[in-house]
Image 1 (cartoon, rainbow, N blue to C red):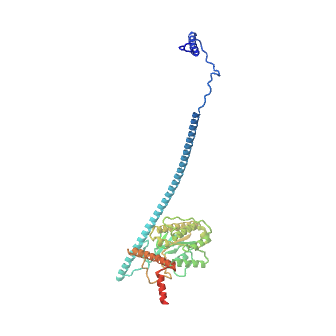
Image 2 (cartoon, rainbow, N blue to C red):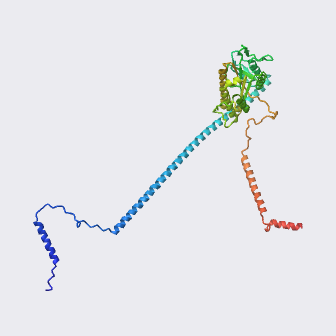
Length: 471
């Protein structure tokens, strides 16, 4: 075999021959219906082998997704908690706003009340100044009249009666609220306070020891006289808003003495007398409970009276409430009392708020209303057989035992003492100088008290030298 000859590869020959034979066979075969290939176990693809790198990447991605989900869930929880906290904070702020609004309303009401009180006090001081000016003018007029030889009555204020005539020495009113047909009140003559007891005593059919001084009472039918007498009295003012059958001017200051005298006279005649003097409030309540027991007493409201600030206002409102309760139980009172005397005072209100203040006017309106209630209840219970009298009088200007008789009150309106504009400066200088001096003295005392005895000090040197000289 020569070197130029190449070795024959039988694999190539066989593959070439096989490929030609297949093509020839394919061209020579006729078209036919081919059936779907049958699936045999040899045709099923073998399971793919998993790449370790791919598996690790999938696991890493899954873990990252889980961590992202956990983070998002935690963020959602944080957002929910934050939202809840914001809601709670908002609710708290709303509650605080409501509370502030309520406080604002209360402060506004308090400011309005204080403004009303300030206006009332201003009005009161204006009235006092006007009264002082009018008093000074009256004094000047009296001095002028005395120089001209004319007499001037000065025992009381001058009041006009129903006929327009000017009357002096009038200190109150005597009002006939209700009277039976057996009595007739006529004329316009003023009544003295000393004659009130005689009028009440004679109205019940009792004889008087002397002649009657007041001519305005006439007894028409001595067989149908009043069965009961009710007197309702108000102290502290000269006039009121009472309206009745007849009104007379009242003179003098002995109203209480006259009523006490007729009460004692009736008790001596074995007649029952009931006295409700609400100026002595505790005693009046005891008498009320003794007569009526534990009955309901409805409280009375007010606009201008301040029961929480003034004791007089509180006592007056309580007195009105008890008198209303008496009107509701009038039948029981009339069966037990021949004479029912009711009295209360508006003097503390007039002094505290002013005689012409809105509080005093409201108190007078309350008195007129309660007197009307008592009158209506008496008419209903006795068929107009009860004599109801209203008495209004000025408070007695009686002198106290410890009151000075010669000195006059120079500071009538209780004005504050006037200080110069240098007073605050001088006061501060003296104050802080004394404070500094006090602390300095305290420091010196402490330093001397805590000084070391062995210290080389000028104090000890001088002392020892002086001691040597003395020795």
